[in-house]
Length: 408
Image 1: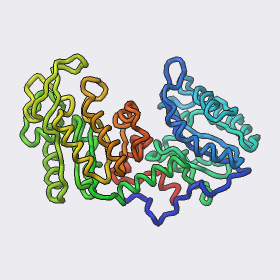
Image 2: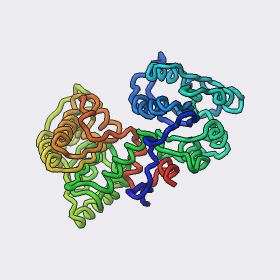
Image 3: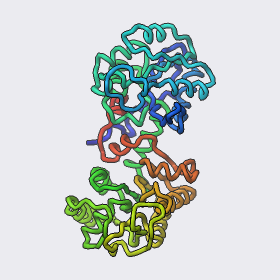
Image 4: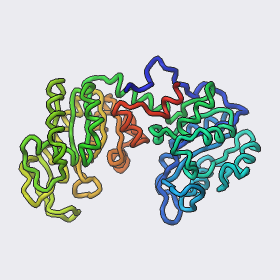
């Protein structure tokens, strides 16, 4: 399936639109981590939507923000999933009061607050997933939300792969007044550049624990990349498929034939694929495990491969520096254990170095993003995606409902 974005589509950016005097329904991704004391521990997602909010405030718009938090299941208000901490933190980011009510649509209170909004007022609605109709893509809920404002902006790339009421269905109620926020616009433009206009050589670095979670990406990239570097736990399925000994390393035995088929197809397409030649192995899953470096296909029984070895890191470094476009999705090893984080950190450093030389590099996926942030290298990357699942589905070639709804 082709993505709906192409150079001939109108991006529908808010850049050249003046929203003065308008009530703007703004969908954002404020699904941020909050600790047991109600403190937000990472406000990256909130800060990344600030340019859109600041633009609307500067224009003199009234803003009605829709966001989700967690996965409430009961339907109706659930105190552990309230957006109250988000509302309080948003006030510090925008430097002005944020109106908020824990009452839900239908009670009259949110509707009254929306009617009374003045220019530059901000109203944050309670967790949009308190409504069962949100995840079902219910049009009745979309109509209730649409009645609150006179135009719609989607800035929630992290939820763009969901055909939910507030991310896709609502857009149909604003046929001439629906737009991408700056965050969404940036994500779409960068992904389109990556997948449709990549400068060659194009190298994909794909990791993760299981081949099964990355089948769609691997299959879609075979026709697009010059180099495929397969890392993380998923590489041991490929190593075993080639006859290697992998000890106790993670492996999907039911995917061995698939791994062979993928390698065959890459050979046929002229894609150069690289599996790490050496591995850092441990005798148990722990930071203080006994470790050694062995050839990747010679892992002894009782030992588990946990990271790329030094020869592999050097080889990957050389491929990265010879590339003009890079996609990195997934860690090189057990990144959460410092003992086995060297491979992931080495890739992060290599990609940052390539960017300094003019390479376009896109980074997505929890551990990959965590690595570049931990090393303070995020601002040296060309593009760090805010959406895990959304980016994965885009890379698989799927149409994202949140994008299609704005462009259609």
